[in-house]
Length: 624
Picture 1: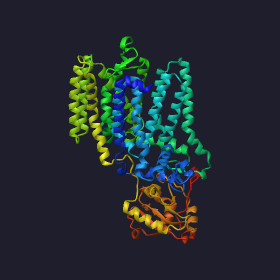
Picture 2: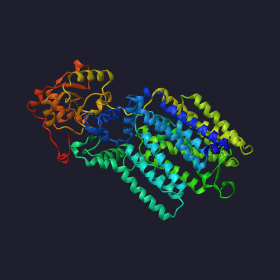
Picture 3: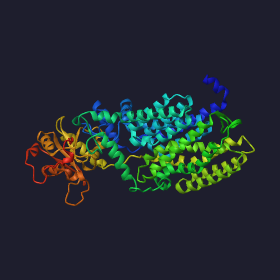
Picture 4: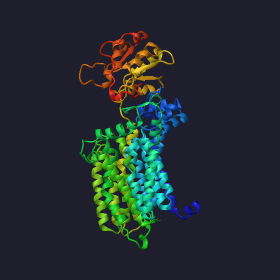
């Protein structure tokens, strides 16, 4: 049946060929040169540790011994563990799940827009997402944002299918997918939820009481799926589960809702009650070059596109038929198309409202803007091109393209060729759009020229990302390469038996070592110097010969405030007092220091000033 339909519709064949080419281009931007991208040692270390045991796998353990866990749920890391098990350890296999997820979002957005507004809108939106610089950057890194974004887009597609087929089972599936996305990137995955609820409420043709009941049940199911892993980890006794990095009491609830919730939003914002605005999203820095280069044309053309959808009249060709570039029409009810346009618009507005309050957020957080920006841009291009008989629309298009060209020239001064292509395509688009009212066949060319004018600079910026091997991974305190190699050689030679460990004041310093397969470590502290090991345990393990080597940072505590609270922990002070500093002989340089401990150190009396004091608020919580 599908083959018959394709034979009867050459335009459908052209559409399939076009989306295959766009998807292949998007996949190439996300796959070429992955082995040259800077590693994200924090999550790479977790993948290495999680592959050692099912215990580490379930809890998203950071270190091989499973004493620490990362601050995020493990769903995306599970995919990376599966990838390295299938294809072997390496940067390509570590980043492969994100790259594939990023490429999969392109045809998914195309199909959603095609169902609502026709192939023209689908192809324009898919092309915009394929070359969006921030989408390319995040998909080329072993962080989690691309997977969460693609799952959110899949949930939106499922809600649309629920409205089309009038079957709420697709809504339940959407709740499951958003719940999985929550277990990838927590609250970031919930940003599209208001838009999905709006799409179902406006697009589902059932009585409003049934719609309300469906949405209420979906909300309950979403809560259950989202909190399933957090609740499951909390059932285990404290001594049997890792201590999540960022947690204040050793529970995943604290890591999710405090460290990644209230505390992080407060630290990113400009202060309580402030609203910095979206200027940082369109400026000439990483966020503007990553998302602003398409956000500006989306905002300029978005109002026109939404007005075009809203002004469709019933009757004739406009009643349930959406003409698009190429003359083809897609049967679609006006209410569902309007619901889809409003849903994409609301998704974009919610994201802008949240990210406007996070001016210091890393660029990878902007990946969630990809689908609404590209979707609104595709809708707008298709709707503006569709109104070829409207002189005001042509004038507005010309003005918008001029503004886009000026903005692209200001934000990408190092890409004269891309700017030239954009300006030339914009001029061609204006001419074709003005002539399209008399010549119907010119309309497809006008639409293609509009897309080329808008996407030339984003494509150039994405290509630059590929050439430079750029990464969105955060830079953690770490041993420089030569010092790390020297430390690994010494630790391997002097670690001791299979039960011995390397004590380290800040475990993230050894993330690269863990990712490369070092043995177990004994982390003395977690996030912001929170103690994890009692002095009594450290002394006992040292006396038993299990701790022979300790890696510390700056141990001076007499200059308030210290560079890091972990520097003044009782365990760190005890190591500095009882160990032998061998940094110079090994090749380590300040601020790092390597100490050699002997079993006699653990049996020596504790000097005054190093006794451990545990506050009443921490009594009863697991510290080691």
